Image (tube, rainbow, N blue to C red):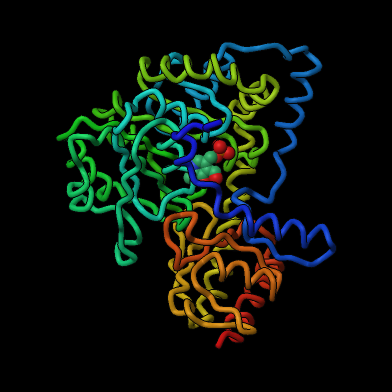
Amino acid sequence: MKYSARIEKIEESKTIAVSTEANRLTAAGEDVVSFGAGEPDFPTPAPIKKAAVEAMEKGYTGYTSASGLPELKKAVTNKFAADYKIKYSTEEVFVGNGGKQVLFNGLSAILEAGDEVLIPKPYWVSYPELVKLAGGTPVLIETKAADRYKLKAAELKENITEKTKAIILNSPSNPDGHFYSNSELEKLVSVLIKHDIFVISDEIYDKLLYDKQEFKSMVQLFPDLKARILVVNGMSKSYAMTGWRVGFGFANEDWIKAMTKIQSHTTSNVNTIAQYASAKALENNELEKIIEKRKSIYQKRRDLTASLLAEIEAIDTLKPAGAFYFFIDISKLIGKKIKGEQIQGSLSFSDLLLKEDKVAVVPGIAFGMDNFIRISFALGEERIKTGIKRIADFIARLE
Ligand code: PLP
């Protein structure tokens, strides 16, 4: 019996071993500080939960159209127009099971075997695997710490071939929280415009941008490119709704139709109750206040984390402009030992840190960089202090 060669090319999650072990230790009663999760530690706001109950009580429990509940598509396009001054029609929006499925369907709709998709490094863990699943070839582009890991026009130009079909950009980014200024994007677009390349703009962290910086959607900045941009967003991060699985895609009608075709034969619609509650959330301006308040809490945690990490000499990190992660360079620690066990890369660093000091982090190899670890600051200040103190103690004991 043979399994699909396409699936054999997909890598298993490199982060699973560390998180499984962290869960096992926690279940066994150990006090593990977990910096691993890529999700808000806040609950879904109460009015959204109430709306879900209301949906069930009203009997909204059947299928919706595959591309999404009409009320939600209307709410999401209205909200996008209010936030970013671009009006999409309800035929130009797609509701998927999280941003992740929007990305998968979006890629599947455009890729032929051998098509290349440009992905700057470090990248969100799923991008290369989603490209492979959709039959394409990921082309990973090196970026520099000095450029804050942002892609430069020259690097983009060098990597475009006749096979390039799309590029994935993510700003604010996971794993390092960089954010492209308008002029930086303009330089990239001046290269892209000369080629027939689709642009997938992952804007899932749009509401988590700090220091009063203003987020603008890619399509708002470059309306002339609207026909070839897929904007990806969703409820997960801004509304603390990771488990509800509601994501959005905005693109031209043909692209959306193709994505819907895939959805109609794979998952049908997104959970109807979650869609109904999401529509109510997007229509409720009061929730903006909750999002803003949470953002200021994240910003405080970010500043605390930055100041604590700055005291650890052996590591380097850059303060994130958005999202809720620090990407930490551990190059200087590779080769060192603790109790005779050597740190060979991000996986062994993470394993040993968990074993010795009960701190869970995500190995940077998951994001394409093995001399890094990622920590999330979506946890309370006391836990952040305890966790970073443990990391500092661990590093101090390395020989
Ligand atoms: N894009 C980025 C950069 C992410 O970090 C995530 C989640 O971690 C997603 C997309 C997908 O989120 P969801 O599928 O929950 O909407």
